[in-house]
Length: 119
Length: 112
Image 1 (cartoon, rainbow over the protein chains, first blue to last red):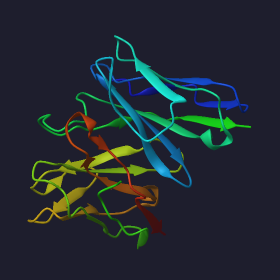
Image 2 (image 1 turned 90 degrees about the vertical axis):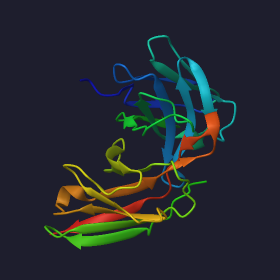
Image 3 (image 1 turned 60 degrees about the vertical axis):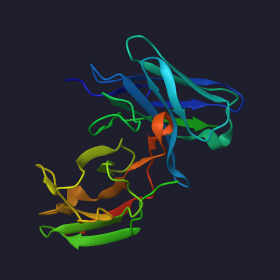
Image 4 (image 1 turned 180 degrees about the vertical axis):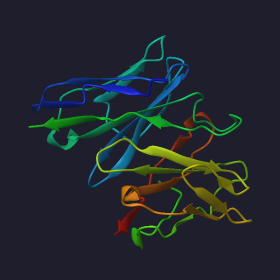
């Protein structure tokens, strides 16, 4: 079956602009998580969506937002871009949400990422 | 806020077993341990997960100590393509606020 698809793969923006990244999860997966990866900070959790609801949010400013559609596809948006937003943005999907009380393991499948460069 | 500790790097010879350690001393009784790896600039790839028992799949074996405070990922016959950053992760937080967080990982270098 098809994996997690992220678009675009590469993009270049300038400071002050905004950007929207898209993630199509594996068919049947209802949870989508987003991560930011930079050389200095490593992989940092942004947020998770399950059934169109944001379940959890990492420690990022309000310029970072996301949403999930009824078909489980997700988008994340970064407004008023800063140089420090240059990063690899990774999306991961899973069948279940990452929450205690959820029975069984929750394996994430990652996409190839969207490489954002802010000039 | 990663709850796992891994050495920053290690290397091994091609064809030999690579044993990658991870400390997760604060893990709770019903939490799984997951291992992923990331080859430069690609998305992390799932390897294996375990709860209490040792696990094996086509990629690796996972040995979990009886007290569950540490685990070891074993790549039985490392190849050059296994050079990557390996992450050991557990769920952080409680209830709906829990999430899987990645620490720094361990960089494995396989030498010819």
